[in-house]
Length: 211
Image 1 (cartoon, rainbow, N blue to C red):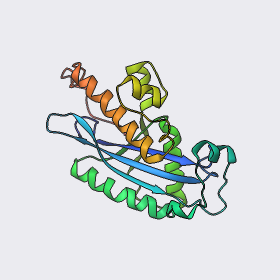
Image 2: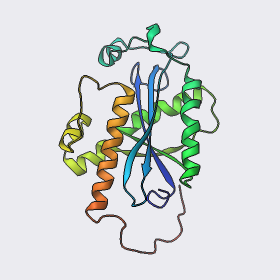
Image 3: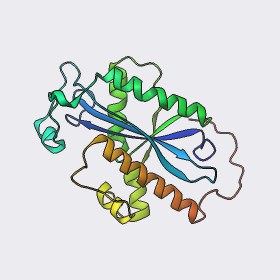
């Protein structure tokens, strides 16, 4: 894995939120899906880590966002946890996977990844977490990759074109969307390998001077 992604471990992340502003709006669900590689270099979806999250103190909740996701933040049956607990429980196995794969850090894979990355880092900052395993700015965006591979950027449509079953009824759950994004990412990377695009011709690119 480390040789495939220059020392990065791809980890798919999806969040459901109370709006679009990562600094002011509530994080309501977060899911992370580990990516695994077999001995032949093919990617597959691994473990899913998912949590319902309590809105942080004074968090903004846009009704339009709640209507879109169908989340009731105050439903006791959500079994929600605080942000710090959710992030700590997600980051621990990710750090373990980084060490197992001899990688330097995780890189967030997401569908329109900037959105998920911003909310993940805003929550991590609020909680004062010092050892965030994710790269601070690099991401792999499956919306862009799907546009290249399948000519479509919407997750549901890209999955269907790729032959990945997708239920609109189950969508907008962080765990479900993260798993489908993981399947899409693995499918695109595996297809590139199948077509002979990886490994590339051996060339000397010099030292890796930046992260």
